[in-house]
Length: 120
Image (tube, rainbow, N blue to C red; front, side):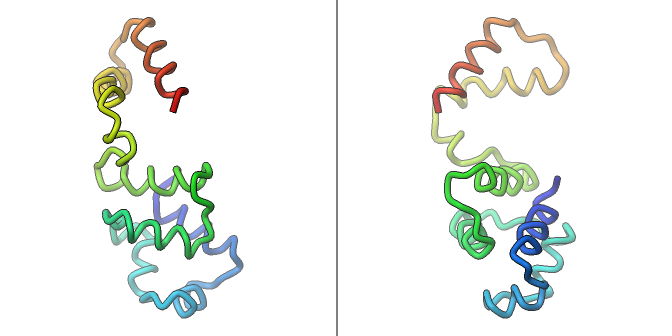
């Protein structure tokens, strides 16, 4: 799923048309339409994303909260901020990248990464 699709599904789950959502939120319907259709990239500003999440009634810390921010980061070629703030976890990212490329990573390294991720 892309960021815009997720945004649209959340808006629609609130029972709001694009125009009504934008009117209530004081947002430009043209920009939100482009955002939902993937013609405009997700904002990179964390405060702006938090504002959108609030307008979409996404509960802070929920699975949807993290998905919203992760989709925004992935679509703009970034790694989520909370991951980048953890030096140890950042050190493990090359393992993830190698795995995603289909390279074989030793099981003990993957197990260590999984243990570290589950501690968060």
